[in-house]
Each structure stands twice: as structure tokens, then as C-alpha cells.
Image: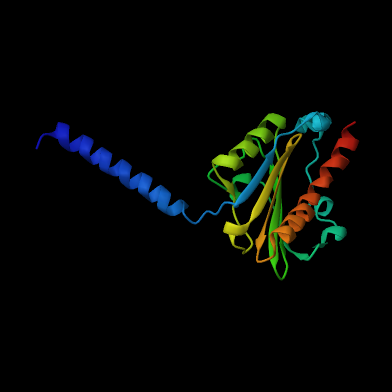
Length: 195
């Protein structure tokens, strides 16, 4: 057989194996059943750039004593990372310098919250857009993703992701999502400080 036939056949075979392997490895990366995304708006103009809001977020600032319990869920763990891609699959948080994450557990619902510190509003919008189609945050608390709900918001140079699931009723999951999303209110104090 001619090398002109063998080489393209081998390359094509390797490409098929690579794509198949990528799809097989990616099959365990869950996505929420319901997802809502919001780009940043003029309301967050004062913190549209990290230059206007240079000090990093702290876990104490985001996860206060008042947020230990959210509805029927209780804070289970928190962590802070500087490699934001550690908490993502299928996409990258270009320009991100930190991500703070919390997991919550309850008897019928569990959830997680992540806030990303991006470079500016454009980078924040790009991440929110990518979360809707390319990838998502890694699931760090156990719940059935097929019944889960999530929301991602760009708020100036920040992105928050709230994700809940469980055996609770749909209405209770919505209530839990709203409570979890309330952790993003920390951004309001940054707006006040920047003005």
C-alpha cells in the first residue's frame, strides 16, 4: 500500500479516536437542566474594570455569618482558588484572578455558588456566554443535575454562578436558587466603594 494512502488513513483514525476520547471523558461533566444567563449592565459601570475595584474579594466578605444558612440549606464548605479554570470544565475564565466557591446542603436540596473576579465587564460577559454553551462549573456537591437549575450573572467585572438541585419540588428549587444567588449581593458594597 502506498504511503499516500496509509498516512491520511492513520491521521483520520487518530482524529476519530481523539474526538471519541474527548466525548467519552466529557460525559461525566453535568450541566443544569435549566440555565439563565445575564450580561452586565450600566448599573455596574463603577466596577466594570478591576482597575476601579482592585482589592480581591475575601471569603469573610462573601460568606458572612448571615450566609451560613440559606433557606433549608446549610453551608458545607468554602474554598478560594487563583486558577479559576480549576472550577470549570469545557471553557476558560480568561482574565480571572480568583474564584471563591461555597457548597450548601439540605435534606432535599443542595447547591453551590461561585464568584469569579474577572478583568472587566467584557471578560465577564464572555464567561457568562461560554457557560451557556461551551462548558460549566464543576459540580462539587452531590445532586441530580437532570433536575437542577442554575443562573450566571455578569456584574461589572464579576461573574456569579448559582446552581441547585435535589429532590425538592420545582418551587422549592427556585426558592433555593434565589437564596443562593443572594450571595452575589456582595458586589453592591464594591459599587458603593468605587463611587
